[in-house]
Image (cartoon, helix red, strand yellow):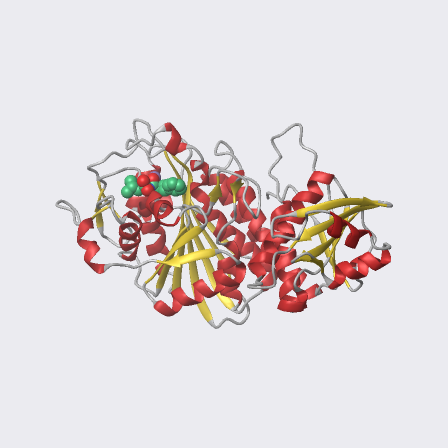
Length: 484
Ligand code: BES
Ligand code: MN
Ligand code: ZN
């Protein structure tokens, strides 16, 4: 099983920063003044911090910092911004900045003030701080021969152990999902995804079933099979089950698992094909959630369903004008082979429905249209059941993952009409994310929500919570939702 390439050791300490051993000590500055923890450290060091703040131009704006050397180690004054609008997101971002600085300096032991604990409470503050430290420490360097991977130990001064442990579980699951997505597509094949699911099941005691092409065909998954037909690497239908001793409800999570999306014969241009290894980010998020479930142990039965395949070109690849039949009997006219995600999801959703769930949630890098609408930071959230949608939005908010509700506009359904089949796999360009979501609803009967993560699953450049590449978006939202 893949491991986090860079794993930090994170502990909460009862003592304040001033009393902790470290090569790097970090305290906050708020509107030009040291925090209480900063004051205490300053007193212990004979006033060097106050003098630095006074004489420099540094006033503690968010995103700024001032680095000093004193005695045996570094002192980092971190700008925390003003007192207005303090929230866990700001703590998470500040923590990720600390992690970046620690890596840059190459230190092995760091003591950090529990930022904004006075405003948010020690519990909430250490939760966000711990998440930010983990997320900001992530690097994907396994294929770089020049990589140095320092192991860093962090002490969260006056932190809460329980909050740190829970944050570590969710962040660890997120970094695992990042690893899966960052893995190049010549390695992360459908069978390799299945291996990851088997390894998770083995380690944590989940049930797992993996189906190959013959079994997928026997189930009548004609839409999924059509997408997979052109690839040398055969498809896998992956079904994981977390079954607790006592459960209040049953939920199915369905993740889009396109290990690579060339577009098929509706071929993507070079530019648009870049990063399409990340088209299995929904599947990776589902696997990440299972890793978190092992630690959170919620009283919910969870089924994870992934239709893993590649969308490639060959003599056997599917073409436009084909009519395929999904597992629920509905026929689909293929008008664009690049709208492959919804075809694989159609069958995965029907399969998920056969598990008799109380609710179904899909997560998928489904449309460029969602990226155009909401950009690279925000996922589009669709729900046939408002309460389900609201619960997911609340969970996302608590984890600092941004989602925005989108309408399932009924009058757009006719755009998916086909002359030759029950439905077409594409409609018009405008409102493309909505039409994709409407298409999916044709294959679900249960209360249903769908997250289009085409934007936030992958960052082309370094961002607030990590380096360029996979983000692990959705893991924490879904895990938090299941844990509540
Ligand atoms: N995997 C893509 C969507 C995507 C685009 C993900 C950009 C991440 C970044 C999906 O399979 C796709 O190609 N969608 C098409 C649908 C269209 C043909 C209706 C799209 O969005 O262009
Ligand atoms: Mn596509
Ligand atoms: Zn795709």
